[in-house]
Image (cartoon, rainbow, N blue to C red; front, top):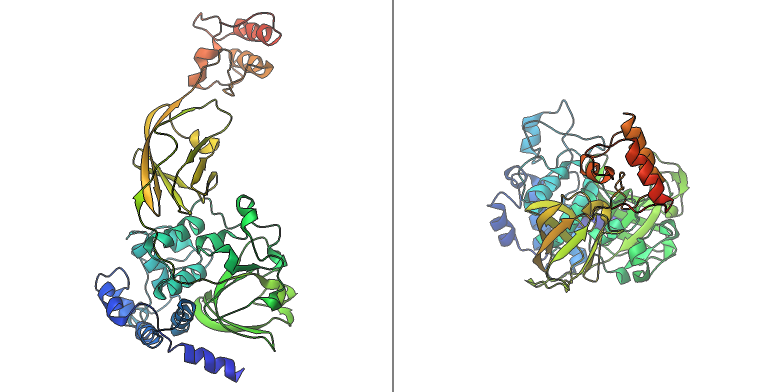
Length: 450
């Protein structure tokens, strides 16, 4: 135990890829660091840790950054001394203190994510994200692993609406970890991304056999269900003989703290069910410094897109992008990303589902696809084939359409305005029982609607 604590304190003095001069220059912009944080001991400790570990691995630098923040508290609770919080470098945003149901509140790390990554000074969604993962990405950034563009995938994975954290590996994708460097325990089995199932390398790994190293990311499920990742932390040390795992984590009782977990012990850990601690580990991931993708002119297999709202599926665009994330805009407005509900990007092939496409109005649009390594703009035309008698708009004529028209005539149901013309099958300017009868005769192949 004493050896581990001494090691954690020693790692505080490790440094990162970014030099103190670079950090100071960035801080002057009031984007990379807040003035409150720069006046705090946590900033001084971060600089010292980064300065003293030059030549160490990227992961070791991330561990140094994590331990240097030991004791940073989330001062988002009511009744605090605001001036004292300011003196301690603990930041809030907006006109008043904020705290959501998950206790996320406001920290220097959430401010950095919102201001530096998303270039937003408002009260954006970052304030409602789990800051354990924001803290881990902040440490990786200080170590030189992530750049601004790569970190945006974190935002889309964690803070988009709807959030996608219910896939066990959504966080793995967000941190841009190479699957060959990720070890999944049995707790994650059956929860992996169906689109990438053939990319997994290390699955069903015993938690005791994982090659934990300082700076690696360990993902927990507190109740052992494996439903999704509850928490992520930065590994500080692992004693293979005693099976004690030491990790630094944000948002642990509202602060950054280094904790130890004996994987052999069965206990109620942090208010959760009695369980052997080894079963709380879902995955572990390693990483190294990555070079930003070179931006280029993205090309696609089509020069323009026409989509019929009656089509059975959405659209698929094959591009030569090497990115893992695509942000989609339509007519200059953000539309979604591939990490959201019904968009998929795999090997440059972007799929946008029908449920997403149906949100667009009929007419001409401009579709902008923005990747980490470039962008492409394509003209998009939304049309809709009119099927006479299709009152419910499913591109088919069935007895349900006849029933809907009959109910409409009896004022017992409504028909969408854009479907009324096709419901008036005898073209007399009215929708009545006659139209319902003609639709029934068409369905019975007695007549053809024209």
